[in-house]
Amino acid sequence: MNTRIETDRTTAGDLTPLRRNLTIAIYLLITGISAACGLVIEIVAGRMIAPYLGMSLYTWTAIIAVVLAGFSAGHWVGGWLAEKPASEARRAVAFSLFLAGLTAAMSLVLLRTLSGPILSLGFAPVPTILLMTFALFFPPSFFVGIPSPALTKLAIDEAPHRMGTLLGAFYAVGAFGSILGTLAAGYIFISYFGSIRTILTVAFLYLAMAAALFLQDRRRTQKALLEPGTLVPIIAAAVVFSGALLWGRGVLAFVENCTKESAYYCIRVIDITDEVGLPARTMVLDNLGHGTSLRDRPDIFLTPYIEAQDNLVGTRFADRNGDISAFFIGGGAYTLPRAWIARWPQARATIAEVDPDVTASARKSFWLQDSERLIVHHQDARRALQQQPENAFDIIVGDAFHDIAIPQHLVTQEFFTLARSRLKEGGIYLMNVIDSGSNPRLALSILQTLESGFPAVELWQSEGQGERQTYVLLAASTPTPVAALRSRIDPDANWQRLPPSKIAALKKAAAPLVLTDDFAPVDRLIGVQ
Image (cartoon, rainbow, N blue to C red; front, side, top):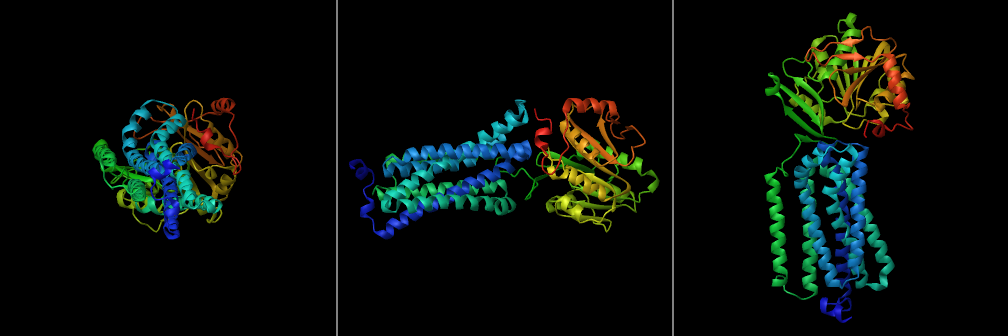
């Protein structure tokens, strides 16, 4: 009891009911805001690492696991601190919130400084994702997990006769704060602020809550705001935080990594004119290129798989004189639609691109012109295709691949049945798949799934690729009349149709699945070792 009086000279019994309730309300508010900030960090974490590691089931699994591990460890430490005298517990919570703000801001710095060394270790994708996620997001999650149990105990000390009510209130406000943070990150912060300003906003809120608790503690213990015992750590903390910000600016940690950060992607426009010798740009969504366009030569394709798809269409529809109707799953840089509309006056293209900002970037930076023969639907491709009439298209092109991820509902038996119903007689379905060169389990599973609905399914492979390869799949009612495609750009990147004997051997080793809406483990199949 004596210890408590020495560390907190204004006890709960000395407070008026109004001041006591105000103190509890402050603790509740800090608990709710800190919970919201913790979830904002969790959501933004996925966007921050996407330009380096992509976005997939593996990245979200790692982020959720690491953040929850940080919360759990922080809650344990916060429970231990709750047993300390009130003033000591308040100061510890204030310091933990300061460290949460510091480590949140430092994650912007560490992202730029650690990503290169971690990626250069050469680990498989899963351990690489776990290692980077832990280094960046465990510390801020740990420190923001500390306040909740400690503040709950401090509130109960203020009104022990309301223990049950207060326990329920703190649990509820923590959950409500988490919900609010999730919604705010997904619908407001990322879309309107971007990742960097969102992280800095969260860091500022952490520091503001730390300052509020520190000031309350000085008032409750009737000590001077600044004295030698507190001035030194405050100056040291300010130096450390300022140094982190200055260091971060030195490594461009606070410079936007995206040309445009949309609700779906970090969109980057990269000018490659010097490399190509003609005005040309590449669109990168998160960390994967999604098309390269030349301003004055839309008929030249610098991306090999796009050139292969164009050659297949030219081969199979040579007698149509460009009178074709195509549906594109994904827009990206709109390389193929732009080329076909420019080359063939009778060609028509319908594109399902979920992100309006991708289309805006294609119009602004990739020379996409509006045309009555080019129709864009900004919605999910499966839903957009369902809204089209049967027998509407000569060609459906699937290009929704995203690093080590692909929307599973776009590669299932049910979706391919839908796609076939939207193809005209003699129509073809084309798609590209990134997979392992030695054990392409995903490509073979998609092939096997297509075979359940199309009489002729082909797997095309380019020469000169490494272990990570891009395949082109074609499904139709009849085989392609040629077994090889010659590249106009790179003579060492010609494409060959894999013979049935080679596919049979690959299938025997890989044991591919027929993918369905109920079971389509695309992340596990994609050759991640």
